[in-house]
Amino acid sequence: MLAKTFGSAVYGVDAHIITIEANVIAGTKFFMVGLPDSAVKESEHRVESALKQNGYLMPRQKVIVNLAPADIKKEGSSYDLPIALGILNASGQTELPDLDQYLIMGELSLDSSIRPIKGALPIAIEARKKGFKSFILPKENASEAAIVDNLEVIPVDSLQEAIDHLSGTQRIQPLEYDTRDMFQTHINEYAADFANVQGQENIKRSLEIAAAGGHNVIMIGPPGAGKTMLAKRLPSILPPLSLQESLETTKIHSVAGQLKENSSLISTRPFQSPHHTISDVALVGGGGIPQPGEISLANNGVLFLDELPEFKRTVLEVMRQPLEERKVTISRAKISIEFPANFMLIASMNPCPCGYYNHPEKECVCAPGVVQKYLNKVSGPLLDRIDLHVEVTPVSFDQLTEDRKTESSEIIRERVIEARMIQQERFKDHPEIFNNAMMNSQMVKSICQINAAGKNLLKTAMEKLGLSARAYDRILKVARTIADLAGKEEIQIEHLAEAIQYRSLDREGWAA
View: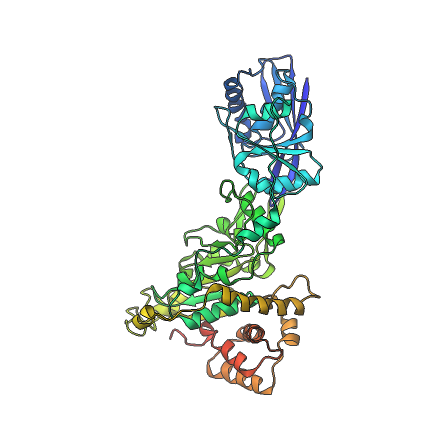
């Protein structure tokens, strides 16, 4: 007897339906075909143990399991449950009349309990698209899949629960969620807040500008000055995620297996902070069947690289293209996958190996030339993609102990949202542009026009401070964002002056 059910394979952030056929005929061996990897092949033993735990038998005949289409490689252990149900139906031990109406995924334990899977959300989206009646999956992943409307999500804890539901012995109620209500309830719930930061008003201002225009930032200063603390608070002043952004971000984290058990929509901006020993593949994504890397997990949020010069040069260089294109394409011989990578880059670094170059109190002990050599670890092309260079100085004891209340993230976020709304109106005819940081050179010329006094100031700054040519466009973009925050249509000379001070590392002889 031939039994058929359906599972799914996830490639990139999209799912593809896999047909799982089981046939029991005369013979003695178990065969699995359709390009399964080792984990899929090993399901034979997990399935056999799970069946015996529930009083069923693995057929002692020829069992053929086919995973179609046969030319796509299948990997992982999440096909265990549909394979077990197919074998039971094909061997006549149970009658599961509507088996081919369901999409089923789940890893079986030897005691027949069901373990969670990766990629439940994109699988649920594909199941609804293909018109499946229901999606049977592990209970831990049900909240994530229930985000999808018009699809029955059936959570199961064990193989027997799935059998009882499919046979009609004991039906399980589909899990239902009000997605929009759940999303609105948890939006902007951040543990860290700028209200807890004493001093560093100039750094808060620079991060507000970065958030308003989507600009990348590098903070440079001695250890203990508060660079990491400030960076962690940046997501709390970014505009709230839209429902579409939330779904896209949740899909990526679901595919990577980064969602917590029983979690559903990600409602706050992600903050990824990889260690400096990370490999280039772990950062941008990759593998046999490519998985998303840290830059994709930071999509619609913040990627924080602490101690930037300590990262391997090859790791930093692979970010150059994603920073420009807001996506990363990973190509293999048989497959090419695209992951979104629309993130804000926040980097921090010490000014020298000892950390105290330019410190107001402590003396730098680095040898001559060492400071410049340390800074040169960060390449010019990468710095070219960072709009704001911010020098961080330590907070004094008086500032740390003062009782004055500082602005909360909520107040700063309101100003950021207003500036983003101005940009949204400005770029309404350019769907690929979302903020000032994404403007190309042609758009900078038309949108970031300055008067004669502004041109003189910029010319003087470039000559006196020794600013490089690449600083020109960046200064104009940042000045445009500062003007948006001030609610001004034209870039004023004070906006330009403030933008110029954020190009520290472009100054000739900064580390001389």
